[in-house]
Image 1: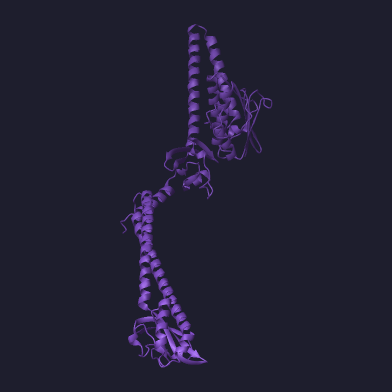
Image 2: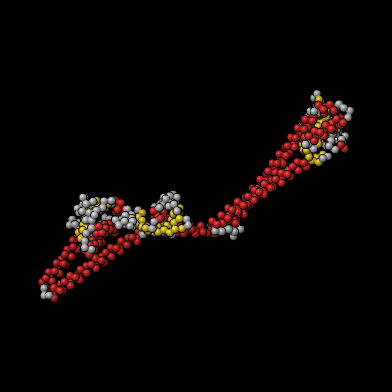
Length: 497
């Protein structure tokens, strides 16, 4: 049976249960019917016996020389009217005066009479001339003296005949119940077979073990979202990545059904979903490290772009110098080259002197070159002073600062044509302020995932800034043109040491 499908095993088990239940019910009903029939026969025999023993006609007949002449017709009339099988009236010695079979009149009564002779009525089952019967025996008394005895009874065969009729009905009802139970069981089994695809318990157990092993082994978060947006299943990785409570299953999860990048605490999560028969299967991947690498790649790309722009400008300047030399204007060529070199060096020296974190200084130089190439202006304020943030010095992580400054500058360059950056280091932390001359922005919702002025719902830069600031334990505010040094937007970040 281990090779049977689960539906087949359930069908057999339920059929056995139904058969045992129906059979037990039928047997119990027949036993109760036998008890009721026996009690009814006993009660009827006792009532007839007591009634006949107390009849005045019976008392009067005992004074006759031949009591049979009066008692036999009377006993037969009563027997026919009450439905008992025999009524025997006898003397104290047990000699019959009446009997359904006249040949038995005058013979000795077969049965116990001691209790009746003592004046008590009793019932018993005894085998007499008519076979086994349920009978009652009562005394015929006059003036406290026992004159004779009366016995009435119903044969066991008659009781059995009535019971056989009950057996027929019981079996019919049992067959109907068994048929109904078998039909219902078959319907339930058919549904179970469809739902289990005809698999047996071993296969289902193996599938469950594989399912459980996969859910706990995969590093990606796996969730099953129902058609109504309710979370119906999630694995350990999903609980960890999304910081879900133990009772998360059964709660609404509509956001996770959208394919986009989400921010969860200090994590960057990429969410993808696919429709399924049960709703949607959602895959959550941790892209925090990937996003950090992407940020570094963007920084490197920015550096490369700045080098390309610088190389392009250097080529133009060199071509200008060569042309001036060819034209015989050597002094102008020397003056032009020296001025350009001095301006570039002054910018580099000022940035490096003010920002002694190499990665952050390189980022600002790259953004300056990028701004110049885009026709914009990136200004490092004269009061910028940021100490070394290397491993030996206390302070926030340089990678987080690159994320904050780089994204704020990129957004400012997208918004306006002039951007000011101010970095100040204090005893209890540092302040980063990025201003632009764009149209202005005051909404704190800008730091939520998906916010963007482009309206495509896929903004991530400012959300990453907010995430980095929270990770550093700092604060970020945004103010309008009336509060800042320039018309436009002012972002102010305060990060503690």
